[in-house]
Length: 380
Ligand SMILES: Cc1ncc(COP(=O)(O)O)c(C=O)c1O
Image: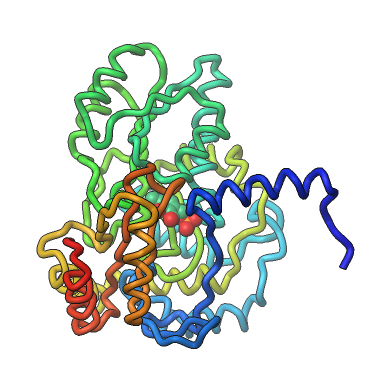
């Protein structure tokens, strides 16, 4: 095979490989036989129960969700063929945006290809609007926010002030130092690697008195918290809704700004109709009695491992990379797939297991995981 990289590039890439391997941070893709929680590793055929999927209500496997995607495939074909502003928009995109707006009780909603790109696009459009008025904004960001928020701020070339995790007093002191700059306060609602909740009501109160815009990333919201009515919402279709895609829910005014200037909305192909139809069906289920039952099943599954924990994300802090990998491997040997989370996803010294609980888990799976952890001497 002809090499695609020159010797010089090969050497540069090789240095990065050596650094990652020697730091114990080498990553590789793991392929599973199916999207069900009880599945098998493609490489070895080993049967595993997965505790790593963000499919919190199991809706990616729901027959009605699958059927909705199949119907949309038959009706519209596989791909959208172009960006929404060209010829990529179908009625299902419009229906989904109306459904998201009414579900979030916001004036309007806008789909993005992924939640990652929703953060990139919304933060970029807001920062550009401020810059165009020759008043650069400041983005105040929780120190544990998701990478897509961090990258959105970087790509927007906006000034950033990072406040201590969930520390509203620290945030207030930072905002007070820049009283004249337009401010955006951005936070995960549920922190993706810690599973704790942002103090959204306090943040909303502070934003109200300081005239800051509150941007809440609701990616992992399924058991709460409720989002203050004054917040702009960014979310995803790829976790609780079992599909793929992202969205903004806000005033029409802000949605119009993003239609006209969010680069990750404008310069990319529309979501495929099938993935939007799947997410639309999942949203309808979430709003039904069946959705309430699934959330209550999820609540009791979480309680089996950690009573009262506020989200389906349970971090098990282990410290070093080696220890996190060791425990993850020991669990895998018992058919329990719980990934080790290492830098750069989390700070050095805070490596952990991230247990993602789903309504689709059998209570016996969770009890087995709890016992395996205690046999390994690991406290939840
Ligand atoms: C808090 C948060 N925001 C955004 C995203 C990105 O969402 P998506 O997977 O739809 O790109 C994630 C995904 O891991 C997330 O955890």
